[in-house]
Image 1 (cartoon, rainbow, N blue to C red):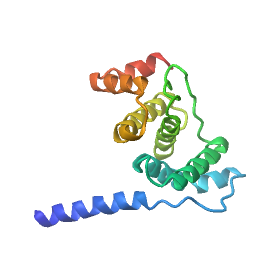
Image 2: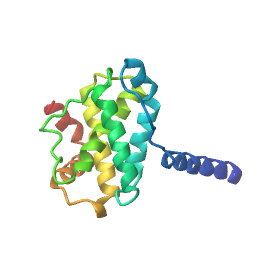
Image 3: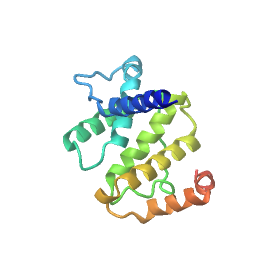
Length: 166
C-alpha cells in the first residue's frame, strides 16, 4: 500500500512540475484555422501555468504568456468569450483576474470541445478567478466582487447567479 501511495504521490508531483515547465512558444504563426488548432495544447498549458504560478513570480514570463494567450484567443475560430458586465465584475482593480476568467473559459471549451456553452464558460471562468484570488490574496488588492462570488460558491448559489445573468 505504501508503495502505491508513493507512486501516486510522485506522479502528482511530476504532473505539477510539468505544469510549471510551460515555455511560451517562440515564432508562432496564427493566420489560418489550422494554426490555431495546432496551439490548443499549448494554450491549455499556458492557462494552467498562469493559474498555478503566483503573481509575485516570473513577471516577464507572465507577460509573454498573457500575450500569447490573447493573440491566440482574438483569432481562434472555435472559441469566443462573451463577457457580461453583470458577471465579470472584477476587471478593476485586478486586471490579472480578467485573464484568469478568460483562461478558465477557454480551458473548459478546449478540453470539452464545448465551444458554445456560455453557462459553463462563465462558471469555469468564475471558479478559476475564485481559486486564483484565494491563492494570490497577498499579491492582489481586496476585491469585494470576488469575495461575493466566494460566498455564493460556499452557499451553493453561484450557478443560479450565473444563470440569471446570462
